[in-house]
Structures are given as C-alpha cells and as structure tokens.
Image (cartoon, helix red, strand yellow):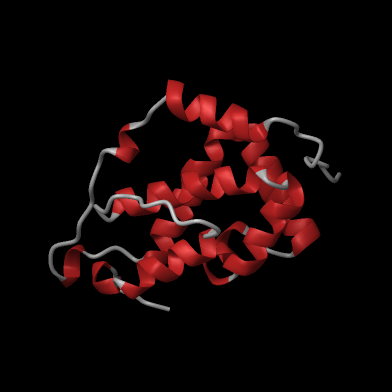
Length: 144
C-alpha cells in the first residue's frame, strides 16, 4: 500500500498553527554535554528530532511518511542521518513548499537539544542545518 501525501494542501499553515498552539518543552530544554561520557551521538539527536518534528502531523501520518519514504525513496528511518539529501528530496516531493516548514521544526528541535538558539537562514534546508551543527561538533561523540 502506497500513501500519496502530496495532496495535503495548507500543510504549512497547519504546522504553523500546531507549533503556536501546542508548544512543547523540547524547544526550551537543553542537553549540553559535559565531558565525553555525557556526549550524545549526532545520529541519535537527528533521529529524535525527526521523530519529534514529524509528530506535529500525528503519529499515524508520521508512520505513513516513514513507510512512503522507505518504499518510494529507499530511505529507512534509521538511514535518515546518513541520507539527509535523499530525506530532504523525499519531503520536498511529498509536501512541496510545506517541506520547509517541517524541516524548520526538525532543525529547531536539533538546535534546542544541543542548547543553541535556532537562527533562520534563507534557503537553508535540513541538510544545511545539520552541516552547521556538525561544524560545531564538540557536542557529540561522533562527527560524520
């Protein structure tokens, strides 16, 4: 069964409305690592942030997205951190301009988890945000 999610009109407005009316403590929490034993892996942070970011659409839609991205774009959930370009392309294919809103939510979650403020950059995708996070990689056990 393949789910065609491209007809979702107004996803940007919907996600924006959800983000404003249902703020989570994730945006306010910091998890700065102290010492090597306290550091978290970037892979784990990316996966957590993607999971949490896509939850604005609901668990059933998130699960359908993972299924569709895996079957149509050959990117499993676990491979997202290593296949960010493909993940970005899949979101763009499914949501069009709405992908930018979802990627912004995911990026905000990543920055929040490492204790940094999110800064908006024109035309940045999730790929650009992850590259930026990697460039300040002292927060993580691993840097790819």
